[in-house]
Structures are given as structure tokens and as C-alpha cells.
Length: 110
Image (cartoon, rainbow, N blue to C red; front, top):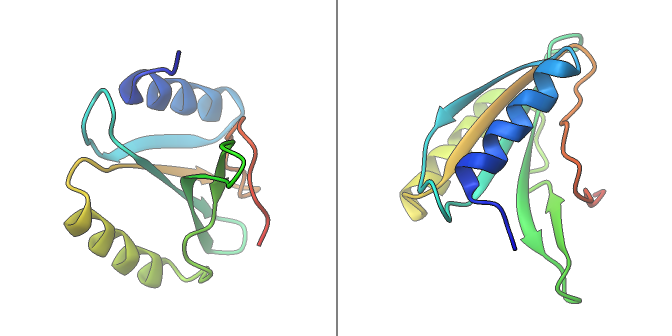
């Protein structure tokens, strides 16, 4: 059984806080089944990254980077387009001095 989105997001925020990061819900989507994009801001080098959930060909749920840019304005434009396409989308923003995402699920490199 999968967790509802609101419970999963609350757990991610708690992990970030326990790890020394700062996390907030920048946009709430559907509380039960909304997709999530995580925006991570690394304040030590002023870069940002996005992580979005995806399903691999073998059915495993993983996280991937939907946009290669590390420039925050570029990523914000990506998020604006994503919200227009999916109004149920959640956006979680994490600030961390080391740029950690605090995701426990597999993260695809690339």
C-alpha cells in the first residue's frame, strides 16, 4: 500500500529538518494522489535541482531530474509549465548547505 501524498510530503519535510535542512511545501496539490516535484537548493554554491517521481520500465518507482539546468530561474519556469499541465502537483522546496534531497527512494543519475 502506498502512502497518500500529504503523508509522504510530511515525512520528507521531517527527514530534511532532522538532517539539518529546511523544507517547505511551496504548492499543495491533491492530498491523496498528487504528483510531487522536489526542488533542492544548495546554498553553498547557489545551485538548484529538481527531482520528479517516475516509473522505470520494470515498474520500479524512482526519482529523476526532469530538467538538467541548475539555474533556479530556469527551474522555476519548468515548474510553472508543470503546474499548468498538472494542477494537482505538489512542489516541495528544500534548502540544504550540502544540496541533499533527503529522498529515500532510488534516484536515477543523469
